Amino acid sequence: MANEATRIESFGNLNNHEYQVTVANATAISKGTLMILSADPRTAIASSGINQIFIGVANADKEASDGATRIGVDSSGIFDMTCVAGTLDIPAFGDLVELSGANLIRAVKRNTVSGADFVSGAKFVLGRALETGSASEVIAVKIPPW
Image 1 (spheres, rainbow, N blue to C red):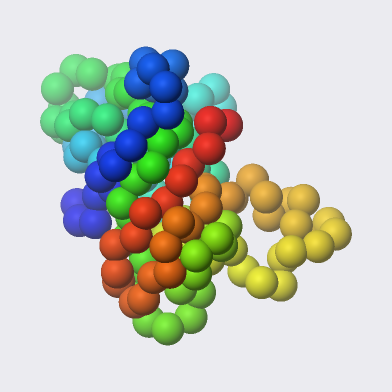
Image 2: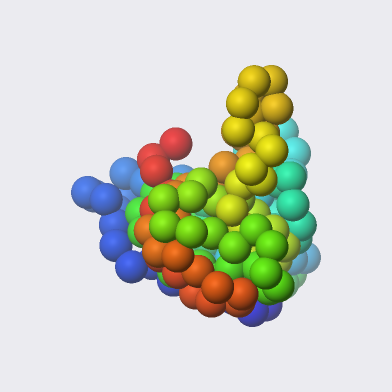
């Protein structure tokens, strides 16, 4: 995979912000992969698009068919993450961000900032941009302890 997130800074005790999720044995996952909830209970896969519920950043590599069905994810901290390509939805300093593909982020859509649309869309928020990005640029993103 490409564009994996890289930890810049942890908040407090690193172990307080890591938890285990269930993954498929046959799936390979790279350290730094942005993981999403895919099923109940607490089952995760790699991000692949928009409107996905972020659960954390994979904190170790997992080989395909290695017998492991659990992986640790970091649920808070400051990470370098890659902005979406193109000119639309590029995060600016202070913007809330969401997933926009495999290990990509974008600014939360401006038309979902009030009322019921915001409430239903809030579940897709990943964190806050700490820098202004440009197409395909790597920027610092703060993931709050959810």
